[in-house]
Image 1 (cartoon, rainbow, N blue to C red):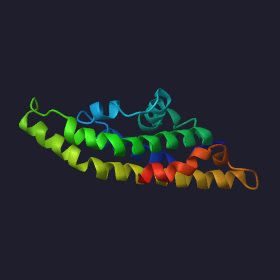
Image 2 (cartoon, one colour):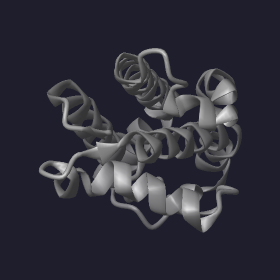
Image 3 (cartoon, rainbow, N blue to C red):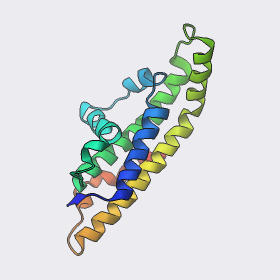
Image 4 (cartoon, rainbow, N blue to C red):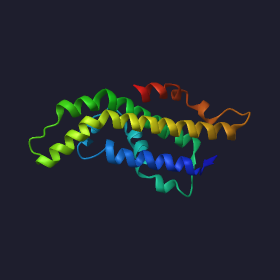
Length: 159
């Protein structure tokens, strides 16, 4: 089944905008680049946050959406454990202008809150996708049943 639900598109666009603006920006990319995620996860994160327009007409397959959600859950988990520490203690700011130092401090100080917003939005997407999956499946098994790792999503998103 292909998902062409406007609410799903809206949530995905919200995730992408929040990710690009508040999570992955010039002050955080260095810390994020060392997160222990494989290339497939990074590609899926890029699909979810950067390439939503490509799916506007063709729609998303449920299995694709679950994989994208899982990748973002793993990202949130890894970023909570590692990136926040790296941002606080590992970034040199002596070469930044006064204005950039203020912006960097704002990004660092709000990183945890922004991760929480991202996690909540990813969870909202998961709930909506699972609802659509259940409606489509009827008495058959859901597509979600093919992804046992989704049982860990709550732990990934909450930390």
